[in-house]
Length: 508
Ligand code: NAD
Image (cartoon, rainbow, N blue to C red):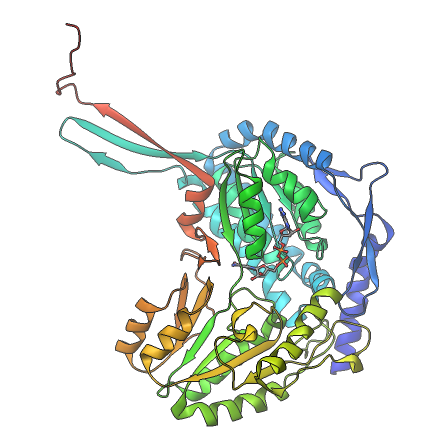
């Protein structure tokens, strides 16, 4: 099949799946029911590819959230008491259902958020893998430790914290929602999910699949709407015991304030300005591939994107020249085109925000060697040219602020010490990438670079049991494996006397 045919065929298939969203208002899922409140305020969900409407979505209210939280609270005890082995079965069944609908999810997601279909196919499969991984851990989630003393034995057990709020962003909405919701359900928590207003479709498919998979009503609720309204109420609601957010750092600050009165337990996965540090002795070609992939894949709308290139002076000239050629060669296009490497940005406003940095870079004195403009030749969608800034320094806004688009800022360094200083001179601390053939140097760098996750001689490889999260303004807490259960569960210590110790006597 030629490229044009593949695109047309994907479009036709996507249209088939999207028809239902065009024909009926997209509402909430509360207590196992699809809900469109009477007289609800609606907003249009626009496709990044052409800015045409994909349908109307309910802008939920505080009352809608209250209902969802009450449903989650009512369902909690029964779900908590479902044996882990049973939860494992249900969640694995849910994973099967995601796999069955992977193609539909990928097509809908791609049109809804503009991410190229080549990446979204994997995202749906990853979503199923997230469920399987945590499903298999459900039977052991409550297990703790045994801690001995001469006269006492302590043992710990874990129990689900209660109903939780999960708030997700638009950049890879399906995968991120599964990544947060799967461990919550496996732990025995009930969930109210608030997806991003800019990408509501796959969250609806997911909630629908959960009902089909036999999840009891109220265990998984989903409410659409704006962060400042439904997100805010969710983080304030007294029935919600913990809030997991994936989003911007400033949203994390809001949620901390909003949840203060009810002392919410919070878990934040926030923004980043992640350095990729390439030393003179790096494997040139592999480093080049990884540098390009980690900023221009997923439209650069990726929390772990390597948006700051720190390149050692000995290879800087050759590396930047090769990089320039690769960036010029990136294929920007319709997200459903299997050949597309960079698709349209999620929303017109976000696209404008990204484009404003083209002027900022110039004003600050960086040099734009590739891109630096919109791609209006591709139609009415939010297309921008993949962009490379060079001759930058770390004080420039393009080196400090999260742009969240296909935009890379490159700067040079001479010594290892200088690389560490540059890497750490950032408000963020999510991820870092180190390229060197010198093992000792890799280990020294890994110790010194301030980031929750470091990859050495690799792009972003994920291992589900490994901790995922950031330090500084990039987040609080870690996801992955048992780290997720620690967040969604309370640990209780039980101390049992052996009958051998002396109990203090007062008044005797
Ligand atoms: P955002 O913070 O604007 O929105 C995220 C979610 O928070 C949305 O559902 C939004 O409606 C909601 N929200 C907004 N204000 C709220 C409030 N006051 N109370 C409660 N909820 C509120 O983020 P975004 O623009 O959707 O996503 C992009 C950001 O997400 C980037 O900064 C990116 O780095 C970050 N991100 C981080 C990770 C990670 O793992 N660290 C992963 C993906 C994305």
